[in-house]
Image (cartoon, rainbow, N blue to C red; front, top):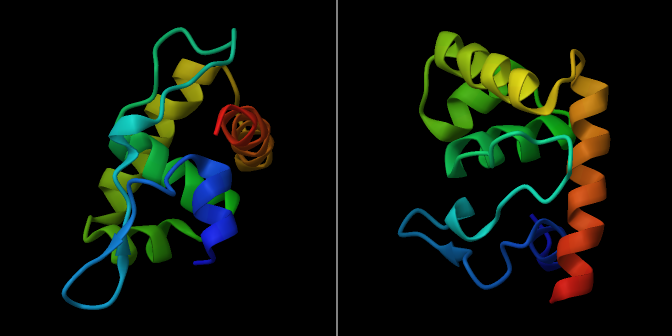
Length: 106
C-alpha cells in the first residue's frame, strides 16, 4: 500500500510495519463524517470498507484481516445499514469521499 493511500484514508500516522512486513492499519483514529452515517463506523468496519474500495473480494478481505468470509459479510451488512447503501460501488464512493475530507484535514 502506498503512503498516499494511507494518507487518503487517514491512516498515515497510524500505519506501521508489523513484524511480518505488512502495514497494519489502526482505523481507530478515523470516524465517519458523512451526514448519512447514523453511527460512526468501527475501526474494523473501516478496514473492511477500505479494502472493498480497493476492489478486494470478501475472500481476499477475510484472508487479509484473518477473518472468516461470514464475518466479512456481517461487517458489510452492518456498514451498508449504517450508511444506508446497498452496493459495494456505493461504499467505494463513500470511502473515496471520506478520503478527500480526511486528506484536507491533514
